[in-house]
Each structure stands twice: as structure tokens, then as C-alpha cells.
Length: 73
Image 1: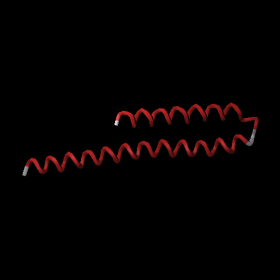
Image 2: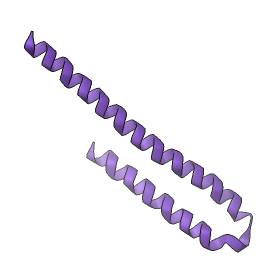
Image 3: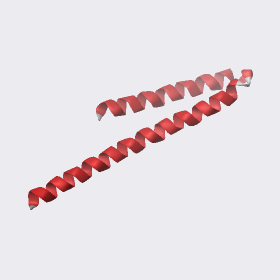
Image 4: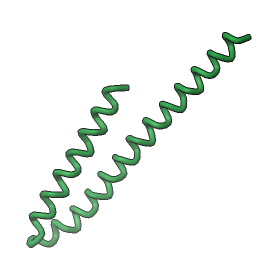
């Protein structure tokens, strides 16, 4: 009986960890999508090239974080 409860607890912890990782990735990717939408608007205004570059760097960093997180799992 104890083994079964431990196994159920382990499964529950794995499911929670998976959900946490999913939420982490989803939140970062949603941020990237939001930033890309902002970039599309800024590209219509040529005087904001510097801010476009900053946003692109930020997006790259967020994507690299997501990739690293996924590689760990």
C-alpha cells in the first residue's frame, strides 16, 4: 500500500513539474509573440530602428532561455 501511494505521489510530482515547464515555456513564447507584434508596428516607423534592435535582442534571449529550459527537461 505504501509503495502504491509513493508511486502515485511521484507521478503527481512529475505531472506538476511538466505543467510548470509548460507554463514557463508558454509564458516566454507568448512574450516573444507580443514583442514580434510590437516590432511589426515599429517597422512601419523607420525612425525607431534602435528600439527594433533592442526588441530583437530581447526576443533572442527569451528564446534561448526557453531552449535551455527544454534541453534540461
